[in-house]
Image (cartoon, rainbow, N blue to C red):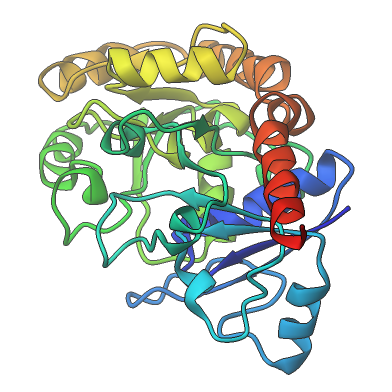
Length: 313
């Protein structure tokens, strides 16, 4: 089965990562997506946006389309009789998503993170990580210092979008010493961001909104101890998507983050590296693309083919 992951915007590299994950699960998958943010960050894709004639032909010849954020569905060349699954990664506002495919009867779901609660009663799916891809392999962790990384999505936007930048940045300014290194990653391509995370002992996602981002999953895959403020709703979603597995996050609210970090940087870097390696094992055991796709995505894919059959009839 040939699957296209289609998105007008980069979505932090999620459409590409999902496409790579589908490849790992044995599907013939490719990604056509926007690649460059306004701040210059570059995200990967097999083909960029907007698609040229050749890419449009590839899209139309695919067997099924994952229409990320729903926006591509309005393009005049979109094959609206093609089995489609709409996936929402952001809040349900016109600036972020378009729900025409959903209104036309195609199956849809929200990513099982903070966004899920904004779509009452929706189906939800995990944010996939291609665990075998070279970019998602742990790097060598320093033995002479504790290395902490933090990668706010957009430090100029509030709340969910900036990963609590202002509050977290103030805390990280006070985490100093000869045995600690703090790396705040902004404005770089995804490949570089992942490379810098891969050598860290601790990966901070965000500790403000009660949510978690792709950063948490990337950190686990890269062998980091991951800290966020995952609330009970997000905690429950992970367990549902991962077959009951308890999330491998260290959960700390922003008011407790500095105390927690100060305790961690007194520990031997080698001990933290061992804890991080255990987080990678959790991903390998519970977040394998093939298992997650069968459990969470296959019902949506089957529904898309069923709806296409109704259109033909």
